[in-house]
Amino acid sequence: MNDSTEQAPLDDLAAVLRIVGELVGDVRHDRWSAPTPCPEWDVRALVEHMVLGHRLFAAILRGEATVTAGALEPGSADALGDDPAGTYREAADSLLAAFGQPGVLGRTFEVPVGPVPGIVAVHLRIVEELVHGWDLAQATGGQPRFPDDVVERAAEFTRVKLADVPPERSPFAPPRPVSDLAPPIDGLAALLGRTALAGSAAATPTRRH
Image (cartoon, rainbow, N blue to C red; front, side, top):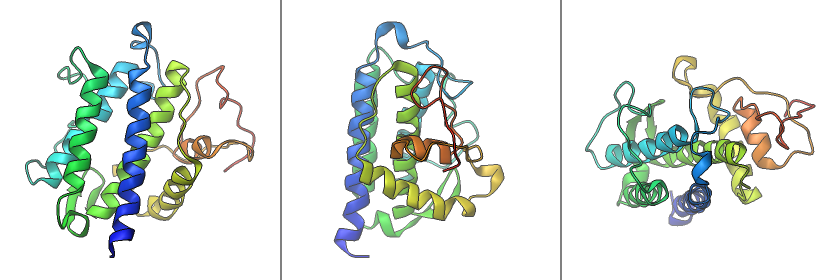
């Protein structure tokens, strides 16, 4: 694996984390308890889940943690504190630093979906944040301005790798229909079983992606 092959996914991850961080920073005070496309989570719980994911992966990559049941479930402790946007950025920066350690991308790590090489873990975090960024935008009325090429690479990775994830370990629902004219981020969300909230622009799918 050459440097450019390794750096491109890390650049994509950095871009996605920055954009999701902006979405978190734009959440109005009255929207933190709003429902999201994840039925069991409101906006605060969704952002807390993302922060917990960043922290868990960073700790795994540093050899400081292992996967435990419920590690990504929000609510057991307030991970966001009084500054959710700052907490998100700090966790995202820690994740990027962990992926940037020498040799990490070529090693194998046990993550929530099973053992994967570090480079695959990068792609998993990209997909996770793209979809949860879409969830967050749905819930808050924000605009997830993810670059189409980043989303399309994530969708290609997902189509190839989704079949390798054991059904009992998959965090995603079966694919759902979506309009052929939908933007790439809506297509990725549909591929991973997301249902748009009623009244949103993505709530009227017509064909299977």
